[in-house]
Image (cartoon, rainbow, N blue to C red; front, top):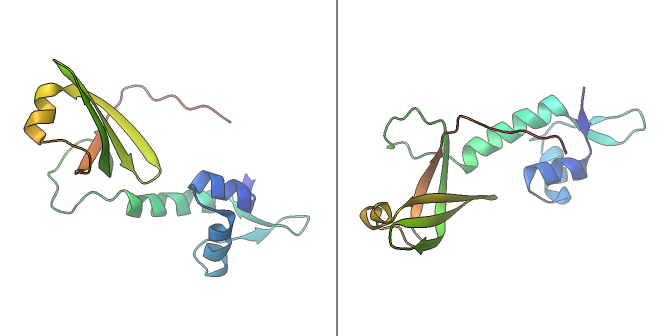
Length: 132
């Protein structure tokens, strides 16, 4: 079974090592000792914690309309570039930066501008996963 050091867990969760230690000391994140006596987080426990934490970070508002798209990220618009036909909209959702190409008409109809809170929905038929 995979296990992760405090530093590795911190990088995966996008926080400092000290935050991971505080979560562990506070009982929020389970740690065990490895054969050398070092504190580590088992992979299954880290995955569960990351999922629970992610649900809170990117929660979709309760009054949102039903949709088949399961990958929803609430965030703030950090950039909008518009030309004659198309537009590029950048959204920051927690540690995630999402970039969407939409029509100029969509930007105008939705009144998208820097500082507006939005929900970015991602649906893909192809997802690539690489090992580090």
